[in-house]
Length: 328
Image (tube, rainbow, N blue to C red; front, top):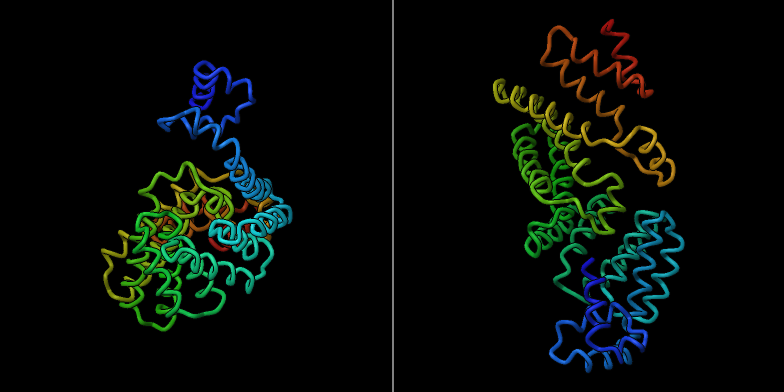
């Protein structure tokens, strides 16, 4: 509606320009200019090339959104041939190379290039930090990149999520080594960053969030917090903090419940897992996990059994085993 109003105003105020098949994008961009007609004439000449090259990047993003990564890669390659200094182009190609084709070396090269072009490109630092940690096991370099990303954009949902995920994994490693205090401290830090993601309005995700979180970053974050709180319960038991441990167990149940409330149908998550070769949270796993949490807080087993039966109906093998062993 807003764009239509701008276009109509352009046609009414400047009929000579309207008859020249004025591009609506040019009209909208020039509405803020003091000399509308001069702006239009300028943009319609040399500016039209800018619009056409940007549209190539938009087409690549549209292909990615339509689950056509090969088409997206072809278009972004064409775009970068004409726009060798586009940090957005290199970032998009890095995303496609890493998440769709597992071309890890190419992805890292593109992230390096994006940061070389713009040393304040926060999300590129975060994605490179994720790559360095998970693919190359380079924790010091990853930590440096994550800290840089957070310093540049402390409220960004993707940056906070990736850093929280990194901290959570490190906390889990400390638990395995029986460094319980360090595990709890780091896990609690991860929790604060996951909660920052939930504090944001994530209802209008960009192409990065749509690709990495097909069903929304909020859905994944609730599930991650469920696991993190559940793990925190066991860490606190080791630290003899039983009252606090119970609070974490209840928090885990709430987080799993929040994720269940907004979960997509099981068949949709199954399809995404097949199409993208992606390990997705699904209803079967969420009901299983909540049932497991209930089993530690409800001695009767009624709530746990109820969730396990639902999980079993989705084909979850562990839930089927739990139902049998608990004689639900």
